[in-house]
Length: 588
Ligand code: ADP
Ligand code: MG
Image (cartoon, rainbow, N blue to C red; front, side, top):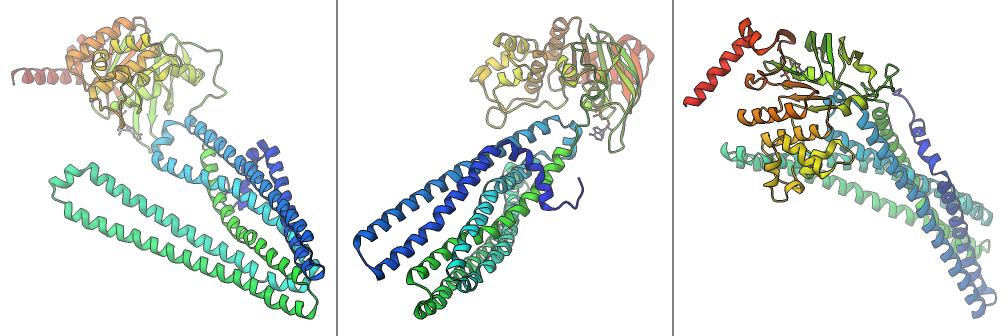
């Protein structure tokens, strides 16, 4: 996407949405046309009525005029309603589609995209941008069409009655459009500024209240109050500035409108005296001026809407142009619908986009039915290795084979639905605990949820909660302990009945006894499946079929527990230290 696209060019990307709702849109434009047809006839009738007073005043004729005027006004009202029911509705429908499309796109983007983008920011921006685009699609289109059509109807009639007077009284109107355009821009800027500052203010308050214990223990209350007062003062100043702009704007608008009317009365009055204009026609002029004011105001306003929508659409385009780093490609073999779980790493290296080398020349192989443990110090590359297996990212060099085929040849959906991955940081949605566990499967039976939570040894805890499996967790519900969260995450992964289960330090927050019990159950449940067990606790991994010891991104040692202990390297050092720690804990 080039940087120098003009506003209309950027808005072209909205074409698909307009095309989708073209019928309703065209109908809307037709209604705009009809509204204005009624609009222009009203003053003609009024002029006729006024002039009839002078020629042959009969109350019957007046009543006739009155009825027709009433009919015209009603027609205008009905079509105005229909204009909104079509064009504004289209903009809401398009907004719905745009938001869905964007969300769908966001779901495809890779984990690395979200590492480099702040999600809260992303959401706030999207909401604002989509609103701006919707304003363009709805009010933007509706008012531009209306301005155009009303000029098309009203100006010729005015010119036909008296072209000199028309030119004279129209002079203030473009000035008004320009004023709306400039002031609208200013007001918009001040307004965004206020919103930006308001979020600074609320973030400050929120952090302060969440961290109230820190604030109190460091006796910072009065300092914090001072800072808040300062920020609050800035907020007030900005709002006052906005109020000033708005008052100036409304005052000058009123002045310009008044000026137009004065012009008609002054110049038109002279024409009436000289007999070049009837009183009815002058009345008609005053009414037309009144009808042209709003379209002129709308013109200036729409120009702003267009500029804002273009800026917003550009940002949205940048987002939709973002391609997912990891996706199915020509290398994908869609015949592959299942896996058995034999994993091989062949000279696998991985370097993060920021240049940090996390894994180097990793080689190992694990068969279905085996437990492969991975251990090593923090930062040795364990989590990176786990991420490679579920393709959160792909190896920088080397290849990972699954059942003898490149991991990249499996459709992502197949790979991920057959793999149960419990990341190091357990994440639960603000939903019921039952829904959290059933998250990975379309139609989960209650029995499956019970079984999975039984295996992960969390069932008893859940049944002790006030609403059992219906208990809401997270911000709006109860807070789970670290260990409970981990076990819930494990239950969630088990629900998929995975062929490969990856536990990334997923039992670090439970005590060793519970850990033992869970692992024993997992071993039974997952007989014949592949288990990758990452842990820095030797007690958890010593019975694994193979243990890979990572150090600075490389395989330092590989083998069974007894072999590694005999080997007397890094693993045995870790083991001895943990044994000592346990003994110390036992006697203290
Ligand atoms: P472990 O799980 O063994 O603690 P990790 O796989 O998380 O280790 O990290 C391995 C190395 O990669 C560390 O040096 C870490 O700082 C680095 N690393 C981890 N995640 C990222 C990332 N998203 N971007 C850059 N470097 C990372
Ligand atoms: Mg880790």
